[in-house]
Length: 170
Image 1 (cartoon, helix red, strand yellow):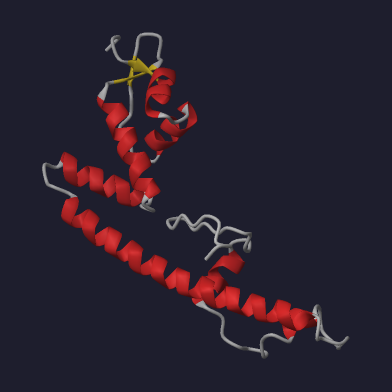
Image 2 (image 1 turned 30 degrees about the vertical axis):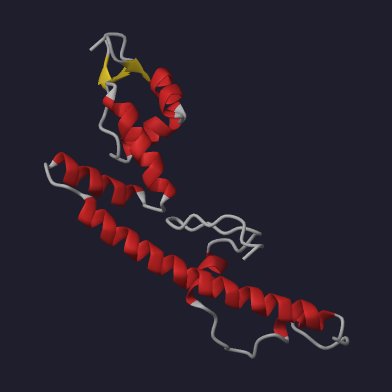
């Protein structure tokens, strides 16, 4: 198969990096490339369409495992769209839950900031502005707890499957 695309050509046509293509192969999202006599990876033109699908699907928050399942359904001769519809419904529900949690968290942060100037110097284990806002043992949202264990929050949040960007304008 010497008439196929080398990895660099495929990367350029698909708008991804060669490293991403190798990663998708390792994760079995993209089938392994054939090898030319010189052992270079060689891809068919259908790989461009497959990578385009993967980019679009990840943009919708689908995980690589979910994408792999969708591709397997298609390659098995079945239409994967009913499965995709269910996945996207689940994603939308999860995003709604995360959005509610983020709005609640933003409300707590704004309350804390508003109280900042009114606060006197009090005794605190670490920082009174944080400790004052929540009673010991008070419940946190599940999502906030998960995020704090993943390395915290920035101005944007991104889960493994829910690609949130800048949430300051919410």
